Length: 452
Image 1 (cartoon, rainbow, N blue to C red):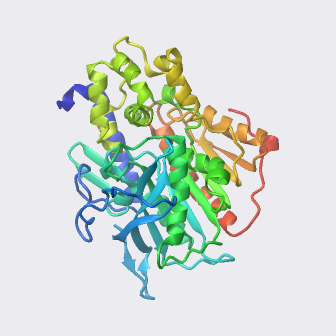
Image 2 (image 1 turned 135 degrees about the vertical axis):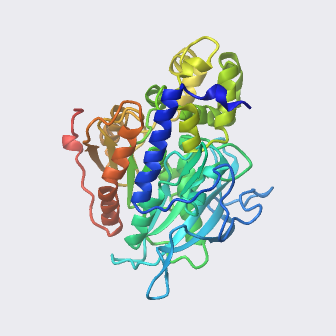
Image 3 (image 1 turned 120 degrees about the horizontal axis):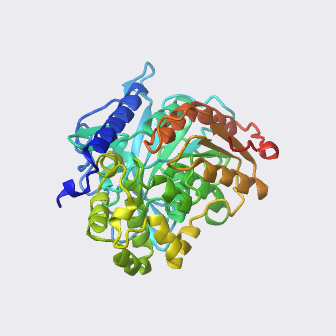
């Protein structure tokens, strides 16, 4: 495929390159080391991935959360401590079973990290299940691989394991961490079902079950459990908090951080279209066409050659590739009619129905939640994230809503979306640590801050 067809104009491409580079540098300065490698290949070097690890077997266990296989996972930043324990902890690569949005079995990869730091709170060591933000759709983009090689730079190929910063901060608190790669990200049998509410929530809850059953893990069945997620991860964390009572009643939750959640995908489509993260439209389309094959004739009718080629290209792309190759693209340039994706959604009831099924905020969360969103976020729009908090409040949820107040850092550049992630991260982890220590959360539903 000639990828030059899909590149934005040179000026926009330069802006995209600067944005990706700035993101990588900011994360490196936050304590994540960079290492050159190709984002199109699994990480190599010390402790490479065992051949076939990410290939699911023909038959999966019946129980959700059951382990399929494990192996040691070398962390990129790992130091010996005085007491002989490896800092920040010892990691294990996982594969476990979940149930996807079609009701079928699916293998999911991920990672568990046993921290070297002691837990100083009451009770046994707690567990935080981390739902990563947008990583891309290629198998090499998986967060479990990012723990081994956080930043991979190879020409125009860029993969950024930015969730490592939050993971290491949680480990420093003495909490064990389990990370899900989601359905289809890492595992080689299907495409990643990007922002699929059911798949994301199920994979996150089943990651907890998998961690509990891992031999040698210090977490117990009565360990407190919390959820952490921002952006795509915020949506998965929100979904898990809603689905837990019916899907995983054995996974009692003590709190959930829901950062910048894509709660209403119809609104998010409008925010992403033409932005630095425009490639995410392709990831979402690919995932929903896989989970809902009845939509394929509609897609075939609307997508032109450029649109079909963009979806194919994005199906193997990581976050950096998606920005470098498709930043500031307009979905109207992908259709035979010149309509944007948002206009197609409005015109096609079957497509709208699929997006409506993804709506968050229709069920009371099963635990205390902290919803945080940047007031300037125009990529995952602030208003729809705030609406999620309001909807949960109306349902009687224990909701703390935190608007992150920052100056406008550039419309559509992704900076208004990324900056709140770093600005709010410390407060989010402090809030989760308090929940894991048994402190009551409180709520501010009675005085939910108004939109600025």
